[in-house]
Length: 159
Image (cartoon, rainbow, N blue to C red; front, side, top):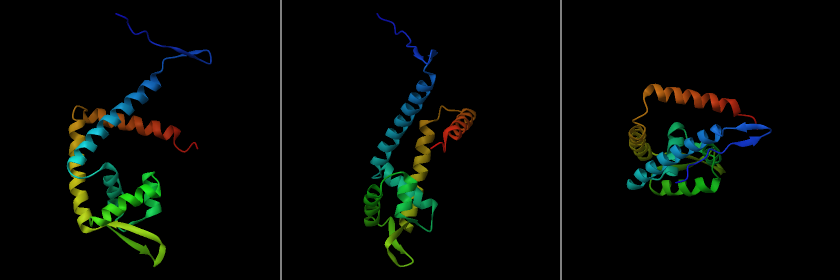
């Protein structure tokens, strides 16, 4: 039986231990596993994660959002948001309006039914994530959140 030999690469004359890559891969793996399970649970209830994300953004802005602002906020193309909003409008969960009578821009916002549906799904989402992370103590969750915030602030805005 072969044993795995740790790979140590030379970077500018210094041996690297690849711990940063391992952290990134672990974060990615955990995120993907949780997202896959949440998506499965949403699908069982006739919802998708992108639809939920659109509804969440609109829930946070009760006066509505311009379609362009919504796509920027969600970091997706206008075309992706338009398709999702079209389906939500057809289901009576979202309504479109015009900003100051300007036909070129449309503001979208949740309907009463959309708000009710979102609140129900948000409670389920929170419960599911709680179940999936049940083994993480509150102290560990606070510490990890703090570490990730500090990490993000170290590289954010360097563009």
